Image: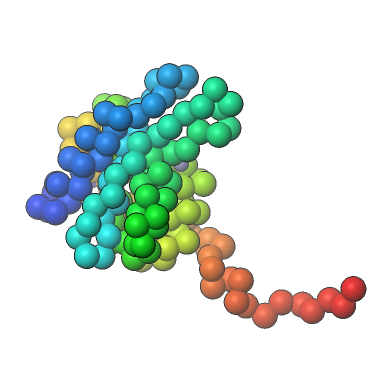
Length: 144
Ligand SMILES: [Zn+2]
């Protein structure tokens, strides 16, 4: 756990507000995310489930997709909120991969409803990840 800075406090509050819009009739597990872009703009997202379970989308990916849809690709931080009182909410593997698409040197605030949090970088959440840089690396050339 860590102390809150002013900007982070607002970001966490936004993630908690986003959680209120969660559509989770199956899991009843509400999640909200608030994504802070390089210019201070905040994009939010909530989890959206579906009767076809595997079509659901997480709050983090929802927020990132919304930001990209508005032309943003440079992020400073993301705050993630749930209703778990005893544990911070942690992004799933898929969301960690999507976060790493936009760099590894930005922060994730894994929070509890009381606003306390654990801060980790995207690199810490997904070390040695497969990134866009990997697609530029030299590969074996096969001719067939
Ligand atoms: Zn996820």
